[in-house]
Image 1 (cartoon, rainbow, N blue to C red):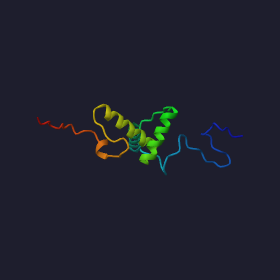
Image 2: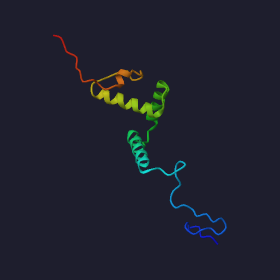
Image 3: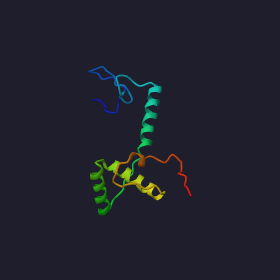
Image 4: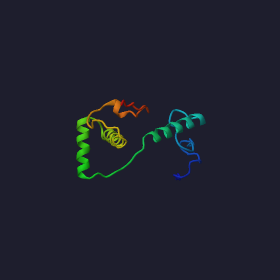
Length: 117
């Protein structure tokens, strides 16, 4: 009888010993440099996309659905745009809510207009 937890004893019928550890992702095991490169890439991707879970009331859900319909974008993109617009309107920079103006969505270059007297 074969013990399912014993990975080191040779099988009397097959005579093949199972390799310990995880199976490799490709045809062969990755080198240390390849594993580290993959680890850094995965970490970089995780840091770029932060996930937030929220519950919306019915009114907010209807508004989100309208924004998705008007802009023709995903929920994620609609929320991103709405947050950018809300933040920019609080800092004094206003724009059209339902117009996808690429200059409006970019941050200011820091130059202020000069007033004439």
